[in-house]
Image 1: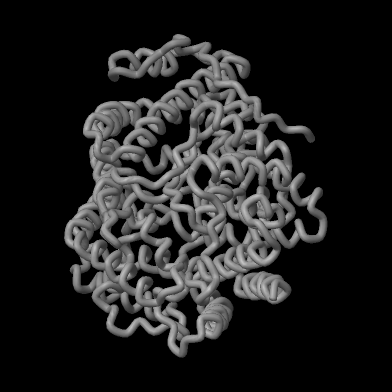
Image 2: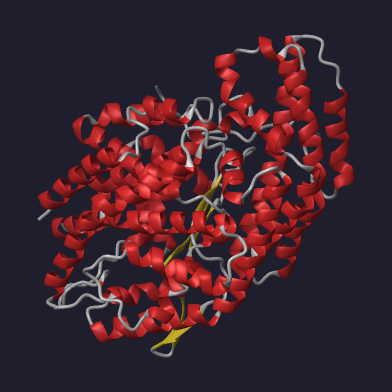
Length: 573
């Protein structure tokens, strides 16, 4: 099937074409119209769904742009106020109407006559929203949405000085690749000290969020926020127990491989004892990989790389470039991290990241490009709700793209040896990321199962979990004061709670996709695009099946996939 990146922004037919969201008074009449409209036939119902979908897309895009602008410039108070206005003044007023509209849909006699295969996941999600809605949670959710954005404001101000220059923490990370071990240790320590300086406000912020989230769960009839969040996120296909099994499988099947990776790294560096600042370093005389110079160069090379994989992928980035839907370089005042922001009306999403000319930035770019391709492929689906795909599938889209593109990284590197080093870096990262995923997920389970814990209990439990998943090949002695608050660098804990194990589940799916790609590249890419174009219209196991992979994160599957990656790594020697 042929796919085109030449997508068009959705044109309003229910809302005025040039409608702008300035206040609630201008928006409310359209919700009232939908609520009061008589539905006398199946055709009436389908038109009503299209009109409701149009409002959902408009509101979603408006909110997304507010977040994009604020994260691009955390020091601009007007942008922060613009974001806060939406979540304090608009979103809370939408929620009661959304609940009433959901009930109107479920109670409509023509709903049962809709194509149940086509609408199954959508209606399942609507019923879930009805079950979870509580009017008492509206102000708490609004407060939480605003409060969690404070993380970006705090982290965005974190800078260090080195060699009479100021660097963001993302920019400073390049010194951890330096051949001089003393330089690496100095920068590692400065970065850790800078994070530690904000441990109290971040602890405070997290405590407030935990309290709010726990109350939201209690109001909805749950004993803890973890169980509430599993329901809200639509985790219909796995349980907390499955997550615990995943943690155990990572410890058993992945940690031994990581110990080998770091032991080999110590040999390469010619050192007896590995320290945390040695994991990204190159031996003396070997320059760190620098796949690009700046954001413009990164974009140019990424387009060329994706073009070689499939022209459609490159066209997606070109369309985003044309629309100015990218902000790639790291700078002071910019929120940390990276994301692909779907834009429900435009179709072409926005990529945000903090590139600092490192190898990891190349990985981030192709990762977010995978998300972007997913947005493009799902844009043609009829309803906004159809495009709300499970995050476990969204991350398969991004992580598979990291692996698919590897054979075309020659646009970033001058010679075969650099290509091998880059591939080795990527495959080692595929393995070494698993313990951190398990750590963050396990920590979240404990935090929300024990919401009244003290700060000292939090610190002790974090260290206990962290140490259980730490490689024996790295010596962390003397660094306990930094390690005690290592969780604070993970923005997901603050901004998107419980969104992290998806990376582990999806990494397994992505390895499965790459395994398939190694056997038959054309068929694997066809399966990939076909599955992504389904959006959220199928269940999670069905989406994986459409991609030609299994939804399986058992210990046995993890072991088999790790063996495959290990063999691929050995082939690069």
